[in-house]
Length: 501
Image (cartoon, rainbow, N blue to C red; front, top):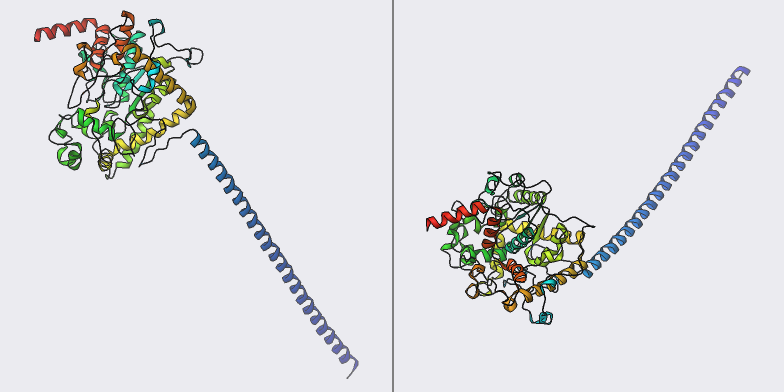
């Protein structure tokens, strides 16, 4: 082998060795890179695992905080005797008196107001002179804190203690020379059940009245039309009653309407409601979702109808938009205190006697089964009532507070006892046959026996005049105010009545 071949062989061997070294270096590099990637993946997994533990710990802390807050809220609620509303049950405060209507335990009572002749309160019987007539030293609202409202619309609903509120508004307005939007032609209602229009009010068409302060007679509500009569800053409110208790009362009071006339009992009507009820017949609206009807909604709808939920939602939202306050009949005294704060009136302004109320003998017990049938038949009213029963207590919490509410309700009841001791003979209501003054006898209708009052015979003229306003029935008081506001028109009606006779 010559020298050239030997050098070529060495070169070839060096090339092979270099290639082998290169491959070995590449292999080591790859292995190193794999190890680096493994370490990175391991660190990443460890980091993720650590993050998950942190998330679990934070979640546990959040749950613990939420549990603590919920417990504290429940504790505070129980201390304030919170009232809860559910579809099956309405809970009353612990000190509520016995229901006026003997309903199942899942139903609320008609009124929280204590009777004025309770034996436990006879120790409050004292002699009061006219100068001390309904005066207290604790008057929460003053001109320095707020300004009393005098532009008011009260939607007077049926069989909800609304006649008592009407009397309260009449007395307040009359004592301050306010102008009432009274029904045309000395009527007692604003042409109910027709939708309200402005010319139903005396003085609108003739333009004899420039401005009205209070509108409170029965009407079928239509906000756009009412707003044409009342000022822009008017305060709108109404009152609801539990549909079961209300239906029992309506059946007694409106027994003569076609829907009820041929039925033996309320249970009989409910079992055959779609056979006995014809929506096109006059006055039958009293028998079906009367609350919804009074607020201006269509009342003929069944709970299983396809658009029931939509119509219920619309009704509730519309009432919330149109009204500043919705009261609850079952909490009448609490409602009066809440109204006092809303209107910036005094507690003395909220004192009243129950008017247009039936005697106990004409109230009927209802079974739980019948109550459920009523809630199903008047499902729209039931849903409206449930919603505003809840918002009522939200208003109490935000505007008054539970503890202050309890104190003022107690004070209001003392004022009512004081008023009864001063004004009433025997301090209680009596059947109409026992009312001595014919001018104070309430209107009787249906099978209900509407009670009235007798004045204490030993009153001076000034006190008698004040007391008489508290017990003056709705029809008589409406006619009194009409004669006072429209003497010429009243004289014409009186003359026309004499001519007819």
